[in-house]
Length: 101
Image (cartoon, rainbow, N blue to C red; front, side):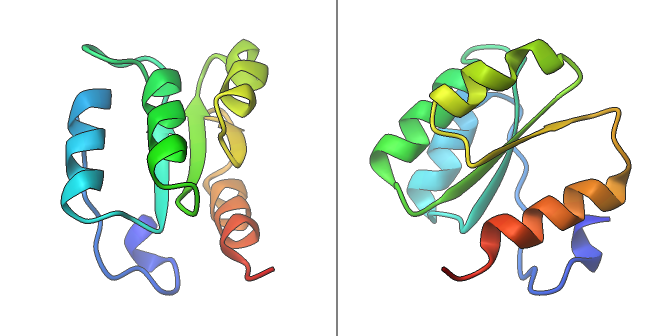
């Protein structure tokens, strides 16, 4: 689904927050889709570290645990999407977050 989104040049996948940070260090992304619950370092901590290091990187936190929305936004996420939502909703939010200001 992500590869069909307009403007996607490369998709990289990390298994945990530490790997997400390592991949961002190699090549800072334009957009990160971050899960909340991951081993090693959770997505909330990784989101905070990414936004502190690269404030221009957009981060959308995805989770089936909607009770984490406030924490995700407090960590610096640009948006929060519940995994139960329709895939089109995620694509719409990605477009809104990436829209030039």
